[in-house]
Length: 421
Image 1: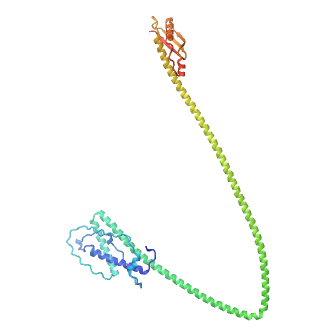
Image 2: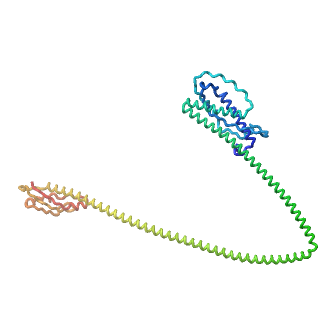
């Protein structure tokens, strides 16, 4: 692919403009002679929808005279590249009832293109197409009309862009050529000036040399000895001065070097000391920070462990208390059930004395872990009632004791009331 940004020559621009003009004329002819119906009187105009490819070709660029021997198609082929495949879908035609139009006359043979005439025809075609497009848009369906307008606009913009690009390219080429001509002229002027300056300088140098040679020759015979003496003295003085200057310079350089070395060493020592101090301080700070962090962490860990231990202890104590309370309640419940069973067993073994109806007695019984009667204390105002209750308590023994130690301990002592009926 060629570089389209490279400035085109004047001949290429002319060839491109010529080709665009030919295309405009050809498209206009196809539009009115091959792809549309002949124009009828205003009252019998047939509306035709055209494709975007048939709209507004770019204005042709006027031809300029050139001495190039290259042909237009060779110039244009280097720059023109196809960017999109043209649509071949035919434009929909809106049917309108009208008399059959006459058969169009065959297109005349193409003549040599006239750029001005082509521009006029292009403008007339654009106006006719615009009017036809407006009339067709009023009768066509809204969706199809919008689509065709969008396509027409895209085609027109493309053509306008191509024309603008060609004009800009031509303008750029002209500017580049003027710039190149100006640069070449400036370069030539500079070369000519440099050459003239060199010639003049050579002439002046030659004249000065001839004059100096003549003066030297005139003075040489008279001042030869004095000149030689003066030269020898000057040479000796210069040598002595140069030697002294060299010695002074060497001494000064040595002193300056020693001073600079001392200053550099002091600076380096100070820098090294500062660096070492900074490193030591950073190291000490890091150690102190690590130590403090470790101490803080150890303290925090100890506090956390202590809190955890206290919480665990409290939780254990609470759980133990809850378990003890639960166990105690359960033991009491079991013991209460056992005492009720004991009372029922005593009542079943009780032989109520005759004639003691309404008499009451209260017995407090103490049992062993095995359920044997350890003691019986009966309270009653009726001796028979008292004796019968005590006999019943002992007759019902042994009593079934609970297996749980706490419940058994609770059940070892019970008090029951008896009423004779």
